[in-house]
Length: 177
Image (cartoon, rainbow, N blue to C red; front, side, top):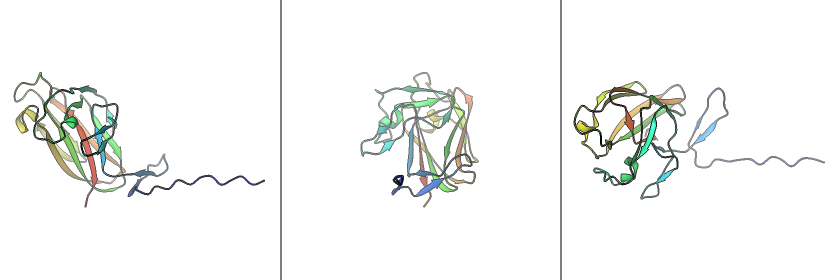
């Protein structure tokens, strides 16, 4: 008696494969969107799905579901956040990418310039002294777009507090054209 062959899985929409020394290749579908601060995925108004909060080291999350957010057609992206995190890491095949970091100052304790200032580094691109209150104003969406090249199989972002804690609302990762 011969055993039936094992089923074969075929990935049809994964344009890239990440491989780390300790694991088998993993299919990745782009773009990758992570919604900071939520423990369930978010589907925005056009049906785009954002993965639940993941990939961060340390920090806490908070949701503020009733806030009015300006400068965006998708306010739900900015109604929850991760704060006090030290880093974000995501496995990616080596290559060039566009990373979009979504920010919005929503904490009612920040009432003026200089009350929350932090720095972050995206794959060697240093952003010093970001003050969202100055850059965009309170309750206004702000996106920082960073072109990166991955050479070690993962996207690395670090966050450093200067005054108050760093915060972020979402991260998008696109293959570079």
